[in-house]
Image 1 (cartoon, one colour):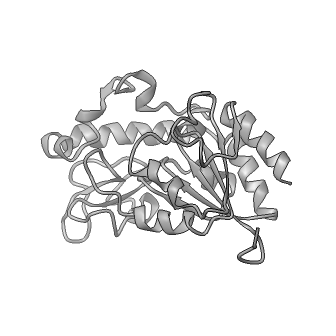
Image 2: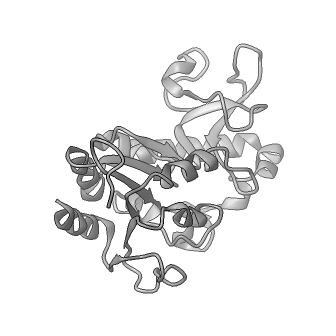
Length: 243
């Protein structure tokens, strides 16, 4: 396989299964309920219009949960690969566990929990909570009345159900440069993210780590290496085979 730079380009598509092993629950864990919330009441544009205070409270609680967990063995194993590969992570997760583990190139497909943006902007101009200023956002929480300099309410910098995915084009461009592609912690059943695998070049070697033996269905013709294991076990196993 022809190398495209000083190091081979390794792209990782990561999903909720990686974060779950650090202790973060996902809405798929309990039939559409997220810590007792119906996701349609806290994670849609309609929910924001109907009850922004509830939506803000939900994401405040999620940030508190995130602060209480740490990167796991899967996150750390991917960091170790940077010695040998140009590792580029495309994640469906909104947490910052990849960054906290030490990964240097992370593209968040669905936004970032620790960032906010004005409610009139469509997925751009996000800022980290620490950049907003303690006068606008005390601590990690956002409440009604916290606004930008124009007086526009801050909203979570998260792609909600029914919204476009602004980073999709950049994610596709990233996958198209892969010499090796690892899919971990995601069923790759939800579009548009599921379609990213098909942007990998024909000579790209594709691996999947997933505890569900049926996760490979629909991708049999693209997956070369399939490890049936949780992310914390399977990623480390795969990394050992690569280095």
